[in-house]
Amino acid sequence: MRIVSGKYKGRTIKTPNNLIVRPTTDFAKEGLFNVLHNRLDFESLKVLDLFAGTGNISYEFISRGVEDITIVELNQDNVYFIKNTLKLLGIEKARVHRYDVFRYLKNHDAKFDLIFADPPFENDFIPQLHNAIFENKLLNEKGIFILEHDSDLSFDDLEGFTEKRVYGKVAFSFYGLLKT
Image 1 (cartoon, rainbow, N blue to C red):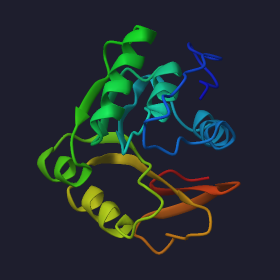
Image 2 (image 1 turned 90 degrees about the vertical axis):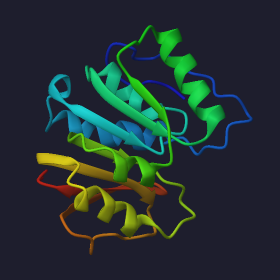
Image 3 (image 1 turned 180 degrees about the vertical axis):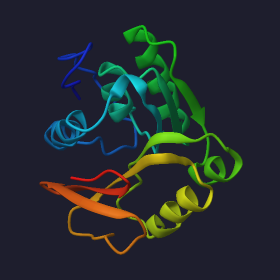
């Protein structure tokens, strides 16, 4: 996996084979961040990364100037990898929590400008995830929620849907006040 832009641009991060993850492809990640780059001031964002896996998306946010980021991942090996990678990059401000995402959403009342979630593609709980974010009011007034999912699926019927971007087999659905 590679960091595609920002302070750590070009850094390659080797993931161990024992991690149970499906990292976002560089192609999809680059497309997503091109969209976000034209709309957001990264340095002012408070970001929550759910189902962080390898931390791939978090590293990209940090590389682009996000200083307030919370990373949530349940798998202990993945959390260990994320913490070690952050240390290797010299990043100290990121908060990493080994936590079940639904428990985290229910038990934390912080508000975020951007929530990114990349749940396992083989699941049926995406509507519950969406509802947990919006019912617990975890987004700031103009905050956005970005859901990564299989491009064959559609979640445009969920409240606050604004757009879907497709990059091969990966899609990002946007919810909240972010407009094209």
